[in-house]
Amino acid sequence: MEKTLWQGEKLFIEGRIEEAEQIFLTLLDQDPVNPQVLNNLGVIHCTNKAFDQAETCFIKALEADGNHLQALQNLSKVYEALEKWAKALVYLEKCIKIAGIDPELQARLSRLNGKINKENGTPDWLAAVLNQKPEGDRGDQVVPGEDHRNDTAPQKPPTKGPAVSTRGNRRPFVSVGLPVYNGEEFIRESIESILSQDFKDFELIISDNGSTDSTPRICAEYEKLDHRVSYNRIEENIGAIRNFSRVLDLADAPFFMWASDDDLHHPEFLSKCLSRITEDPSIALVYPVTEMVDIEKRPKGLARDTYLVDQEEPVERFRQLIWNLGLCNMFYGLFRIKFLRTARSTRKHLYRAYDNLLLAETALSGKIVQIDEPLFTRRMTRGRDLMTLEELNANLINAHDSYKMTEGITLPHCRLTYAHFELINESKLSDITKNYLFNEIRECFKSRFGSQMLYEIDRALKQIDKSVYYYTWDNKAADHPQTDDLRTLNNFHINNLIKVLQEAAFIYPELPQIREGQASCLKAIRADTGPEATPQELAVN
Image 1: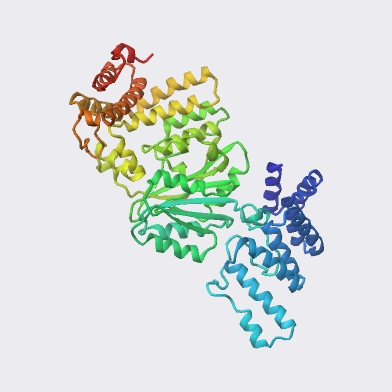
Image 2 (image 1 turned 45 degrees about the vertical axis):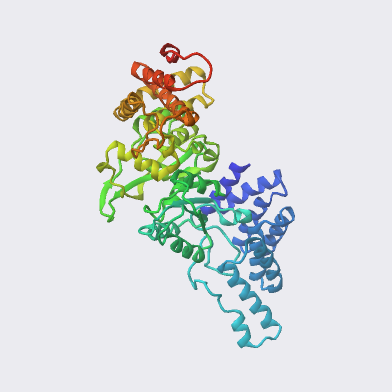
């Protein structure tokens, strides 16, 4: 049903009105009280100026769902087109009770009151005052998501993208999630590029992670200017990864994309991504070619991120992605939200390459397709090439999830690698396929990130040799002596370290020093009862 409904809406957008009408009529035969189908047919009748038939469709849609926002708004506009001002006002007021007053609805409310008062003999000067545009109205600027070529015509779809009028209760077609922390330098430009999309039916969800600069004021301004913008502020910084998850949790659309506070989008970004992803239900993610610029917006060329991840077989897609993924520009493409809703990786909160893991899971779920046009501009602002591996890990942990710093000795690249094993193990693939991919993951990550993993392992083992079992990436050791009074806390730190080394030993079973480090940790634990484990008992099969 849903797929066919999208097909009908797509045909309508393309101007193939008769074909769209046939699909909706077929759907109506199957379900005579479907409010979305009835509303769609009403919009088609409005397009053909058949307002009586449109009125019937919208009324039936409201009989099926009295809170269907677009049917209410469309029926009000039908009566306005027919100059039935009182009836138009009744349905507009019902619409406002559900949606609240935004500038466009407030302007229509004033206009209808002016028409009614004029018919009732209200003096011209008073009617003019009642009919004035409300404070905050943007004059002749087009209200996003609506066609204003005939302001008294019923709401109809934009020229590009799926129909606004086919979604009841203000459910947008796309949710754009923009997590931000202290982004005052570039966020205006980023928001403007999103609001300038030629496809209008989207919501922009901004989640401010406790910014201390002028970010809150800037975002609040845009929330007042455009009803599609929702500004949400968290008083305490929860880390970038949790904030990225938060905007997804707040989303209410079948398609979703993340945006950042310093990147830019071409006006056709959404419309072209939508056109591609709606062609094939097996596509989970669409992303365009990325143009790279520096902090001053000086061009640095096109990103080399064209990966073949559109095969029919999920195993091959997964293989291609883990071996070739570099800069994760595709992370900022357009997703089917149903894939993200069921993704386990969105709940793991990795602080090292969270996007890598999510994209790997996406490749297992569906095809990833690139549009061969530079529609996305990524501003390279971080300067990571100047950091040592120790500085880079400390910077990433603090920026993405500062709470993770309290874990002590960690192996970020080993954790990322092992998370891919967990991802495959949690999948519905056969045991034979899982075993094959386990070996592929081990080979791939040791080849691509082996130097980083070996550095992390060596760093951990050197601390263990010094009987140090708690040591963070910003070089902070435990601030207490290892005494009997703190035995449980010390053993907790050591136990965490054993788990970390166990993951490393699975990746590098050929390195006996990892198992020796685990054995040293076990010896350090002051167990109340039970025999001491031997290195042989720790061996990974």
